[in-house]
Length: 412
Image 1: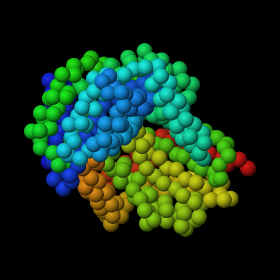
Image 2 (image 1 turned 135 degrees about the horizontal axis):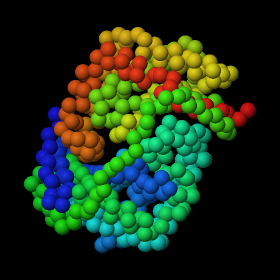
Image 3 (image 1 turned 90 degrees about the vertical axis):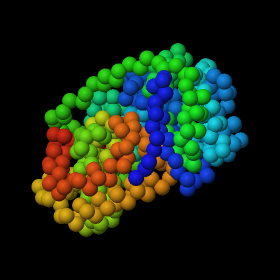
Image 4 (image 1 turned 120 degrees about the vertical axis):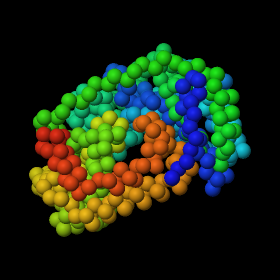
């Protein structure tokens, strides 16, 4: 059981405090309810670009990293389709430095053409490195728009193209900041060897005077139900043919998310899993294969991806995958098989709660999804999934008309 205190400032900033006396450190996690799904389709990549800009100096602090390093702190950030998350760790006695730094970034950035140009170049290089300069790197640039036709999950977090990142102007950046970066659009979690009353005083001191901003109600287009099988063939200079199968699934807050997660584990969690045993060990059709979830807040994707063994055709490989998927829908898994994957998930959830930083991130995410206390009930949601739930979820997922396939050909 993770215990915490929770309060909200007058400006709308939600604050969660978790005391962990086992560490001399403290973590601050600041989660903003803004991700790439909130972007203009003609200006994608701004949410991720902004993550970089947040380290380029704020209104009163020209260099974010220097004062943090002087007090023994560390920091990083990440952007997803759904959120942008900033976190830092400091020795507990230097907690106020963290509040000073994060509050100034929330107040305003030191917007400049120079900072924008520098970070645009950084992101463009990252785009090239991640998507063009490594084998299979451009998969998501093609698979997302194949699977999504309306919902903004149809582009990756980094954006659709380098050209869109290059075109971003300073006035667009300012507008994006004041539209999304606000106390009433954020959740602050402090975890570590801290006193809740002291954290409350620091929060009021450093964040209380930042005014709330007008946040537009999110109104994203819903993805219509897929009614036909979709496919795309690409040829690239890669060592092996690869297949990427995407199925539409439930959203993160749906009860069906938990049974879907367990379906992926029955199929591919570990060397005793079904597709490892059947498709790699017994039939030698793949050199590697995996089944996993995109993990998005809105209805996301269930993915089956694999590298084909030399000499194996796409037809043979895909047919073998469908055999295993259809078996999940037609036959009930054994109680033993289900319990085995439940045990794995339970242990991984428990181990993830050892780190004070992980707890801060997870508390923020659960609060944004509905209630921070769900962190204490998540294991039960997995435990409650039945053998029948696994079969029903599989039957719903693994339909040809719910599937988009990317055939990634190795140049011969």
